[in-house]
Length: 271
Image (cartoon, rainbow, N blue to C red; front, side):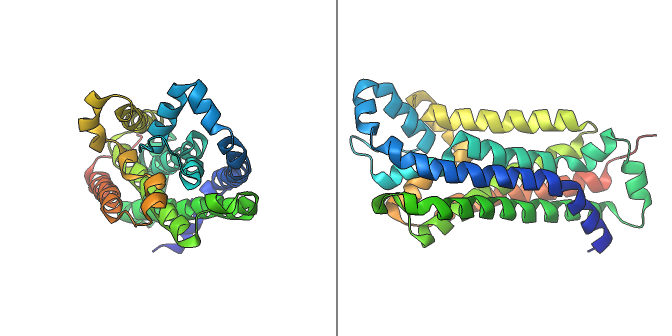
């Protein structure tokens, strides 16, 4: 590991990471405080607007019948679109830095002219991607735990359940990043790489959302990343989703390895 290269990469991503971490910290505090207030009126909302129940089930990725437990409602915190958007934005922005970003900025020739290999640059980017992702998820979790005394006892998940959800969320982050690194390795324009990964993630989200609304879509739900991230199910049965985690890690591993091989063998230059 090249310490100088690692330091350079960390300096380049630290501001964006800090801003997103603060955003997740604040959003998790806000949602933790607001969700119990919303839960008090959900029964009346479901009676007046049946579609609201269907939409919530689609967001949670599971059906809860006529009865929705307080803990299932608290799972909204971890699948809220703002939380997912912030996390995915960071994953996509960091995973498309090299080689697509460096090529687009015309700095890749200078970077690869240093006494470092493509392999070193690539896996340094991966290391920074993983470590900053852990920081983001930990920061959001801290925000939630600080505000959790405001939640009723029956809505508050225990520490072990929370850690299982955080682990599953990290795997989702890694899967999105793995796709990002793979796509970036084929591109010379970062904007194109970001657009492709964003489209993949958006289609994945809509696919899993639609699968809860229409039976015709359910056979294809396995193609969506969120099919393997369902905090409400973890809270309901208290079991670690080992199968879902393995699928997400498999996506991440294939993406990262494919990206590494492509980056190592493709022609990269700006002159």
